[in-house]
Image (cartoon, rainbow, N blue to C red; front, side, top):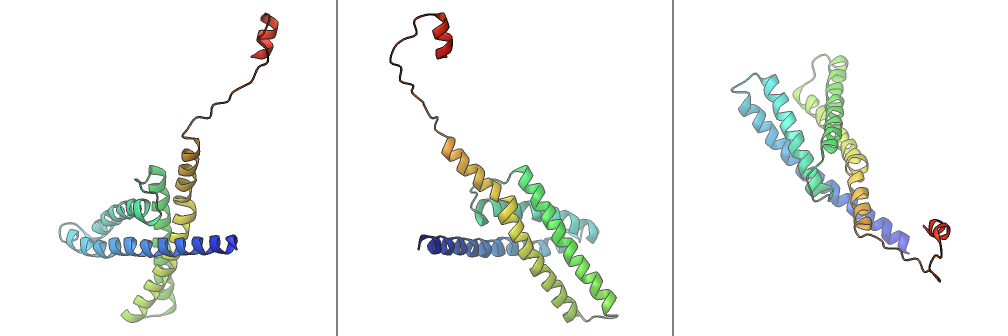
Length: 174
């Protein structure tokens, strides 16, 4: 009975985390699309996209650390690096999907391109969620649990029936 309840709690926690992941990541993604357009009016689009991608990945990682995965604090440098790696992998998946589409269909319409891009983005997003939950932010939960358990020093007492009588016994007692 407890195992079933435990599994249900884990599933509910994963679903809640995924909903927060979609809200935080999706919100940052939508804001990024507007930001790229605005910044591209001052600098070349390729540079604007690169700049906004870096900034949005940093922002999304902070949001995921604080809200999505319940870490409650700032993301570490390691988490930022791992998150950037997963974002780069997701970017590669969507680029590959679009390149494959271009190879398979001579002149794909805008609707087909959107279907392929959004499908690849959704699959990459699900994979990214799994990586962030199980790898990037999982260590933080394990570390926090260890810290809580070891935060208070454990004092050991040794009962002695008699005091050491000489230097040799004193050395053995230590």
